[in-house]
Length: 405
Image 1 (cartoon, rainbow, N blue to C red):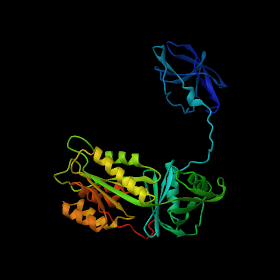
Image 2: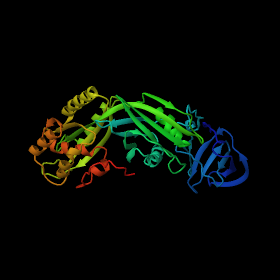
Image 3: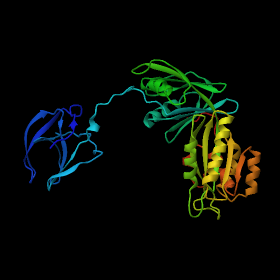
Image 4: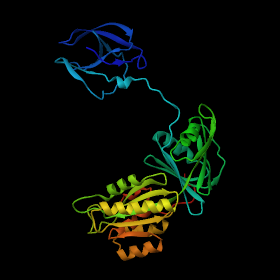
C-alpha cells in the first residue's frame, strides 16, 4: 500500500507500535514504543472491535491514552483489507505546513460610524471576523464612559455612545480595553481605542486593517503592553428601508427577497448593516405569518442614498410577486417618531389612511403604496433589533440616552 505523507511529530511525540498478527481475526500484539516520523500512513477502522489504528507498511500505530485531532478526509479512498477492516487514505492537504503572514492579527471585516444629525451621538458598529474576541470587547468596552449602550446582533457589535473624548482607566481582566474618543470632523469620524495585552492588539492592528478604514495611527501592541490606536472612517447617516407584501399565496417570502437584494447592493458607500423581521397583528389579508421587514444601511452621502433607494425599488418591482407591495424609506438616527404607530400595528388593525398620515408627519418617503405600506412603515423603528421584533406584541421603547451598561 502507498499513501500520502503525514507529518506526526507536531501532533504527538509517541505511539505504541503494534504488529497485526492475523488481519482476518484482528489479533494484535504490542511490541514496543517508538517515536513516529513522517511516513506513508493509512487510517483504518476495525469493525470488531472498533479501534482506530494508523498503519505504516507492516506496522500499525495506536495512540496511548491520547486523543488525536484528526478530521475526516475530504476525499475518502475506502478499500477493504478484510471483512472486519476498512481503510481510507489520509488527505495530505490537512497536514501541510502553514505560513501566517500576520499570526497575531485578526482584522475586523468593517467598522462603521453612524451619527445623528447634530453629531452629538454616534453608533459605532463593528463587523467581527472572530466573535469570541468581539464578545470580549463588548464586555470591556461597555464600561467606557462614552458608551451608553452596548449590544451584539449576530457578529455585529454595536456601541451607542456620545461623541467627544473621555479618560479610560484600564485594569487587567476587569476593564482591559475601551473606546477613548469619537470625534466627528466633517464627513469623517476618528475613533480612538486603547487596550492592555491582547486587548491592545484588538485596539490597534485588528481594527486598523478593517475594510473601509481611511487612515490610522497605532502604537506597538501585544504582550504586556498598553496600546492605543486611532482609525478614521467615513461618517454615515442611517437609512432605513421598510418592506411588506412581496409574496403571494403561491410563491415568495419578503424576508428572503429583501435580504438578497440588500446583499447585492451592499457597498462601502451604502453598507448593509442589519435585517429584522417584524411581527404584525394578524389581519385577514395576510399571506401566512403577517410579518414585515426593515433593512438598515449606513450611507456616506445623499448620492449614495439616492442610488441605493432607486436600485432597491427597481429590484423590488422586478421580483415582487404581489401587487400590494409596500416600500418606505426614512433617513433618521432613531426613528422614534414611529414608535407609537409601530406598537399599534403589532396589537391591532391599522388603516391605510392612518399609515399615510403618519408617514407624512415623520418625513417618511412612500415609494410603493400598496396595502403592504402599513406593515412596511411599522417595521422601521425595529432596525437592529431582530430578536425583539419577532416576538408578538412586544412594545418598542425609546432609546435611553443615559448609560445603561
